[in-house]
Length: 98
Image (cartoon, rainbow, N blue to C red; front, side, top):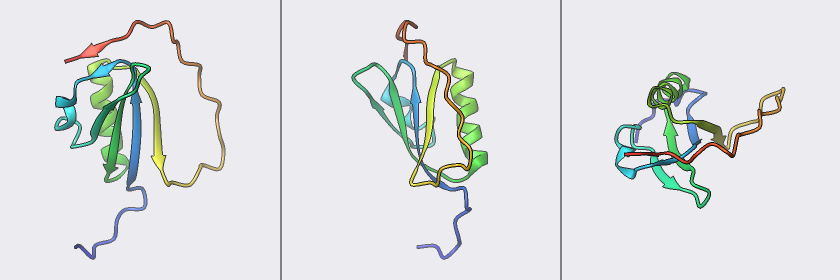
């Protein structure tokens, strides 16, 4: 066990994606667990070291062209100000990335 302190922005995240992403992508997403919801979305869950790692992961998602639906930090404090999220277009055809 390391005594080195964790960065303040380290945490466990849940990232929701539009479409179905095959589980074999777990290694490409730094070992985040890949699961599927009944509504056809893919959920990535796991620890992310810091904001730089989070932004790198989001860039990978962007480069694949997968719709990003939500990013949630588990157990983190809520920001001081809140913005209303844009509505998600549910008429977009389902995608499967293999």
